[in-house]
Length: 127
Image (cartoon, rainbow, N blue to C red; front, side):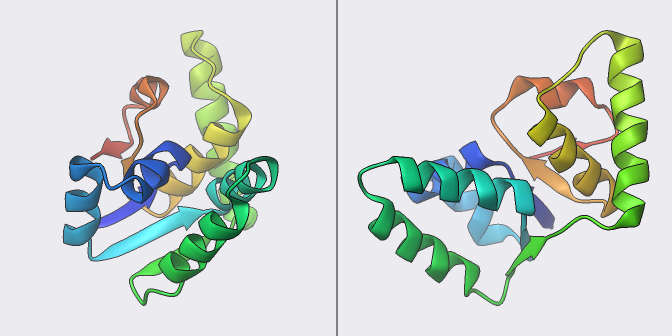
């Protein structure tokens, strides 16, 4: 299984929550959307254990099963499509999560996230 992590899913794994740890152990590939990486680093910078958290993130990113996923021109088309869909439904989601959704749809990934609003996007498979 190829999964993409939302920020709260990475945090759950970092806290060694059993569901998160088990899912990451079974994944063939783990993708961290660029927005998630930015949110994590912002949280580390604002917190009191930034160095320790940043070191753990560096170890995680060093795994051969982990990749950071960046947008390209095609991503913008997926972003626009998901944005329009959510707007028609009257169910907007936060902008950062819209970028995550666009990347997940574009690359046909399974999303591991605890945010319920991703369920508003039925074309996204969820872990």
